[in-house]
Length: 92
Image (cartoon, rainbow, N blue to C red; front, top):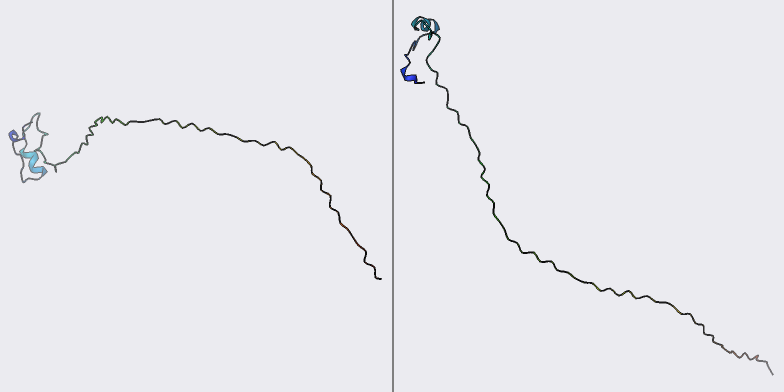
């Protein structure tokens, strides 16, 4: 819509003065455009990129050889004889 083509009815008039200045007919309810404060809308766009990475992976296998040592005791017996000599000291 071209607002410059619209006639300027009632500039500097109150509502009663504007009603008398408006033309009659089908367009009698149109007023001059009211300019609002500008509004800014922000649209955030995310652009995704696929970045391929090559990462070498090595699997190292460590073999553990565990030797479990068991002991089976074998019992034996030894005997020792101790001899003691006891002398009775008698007075002479």
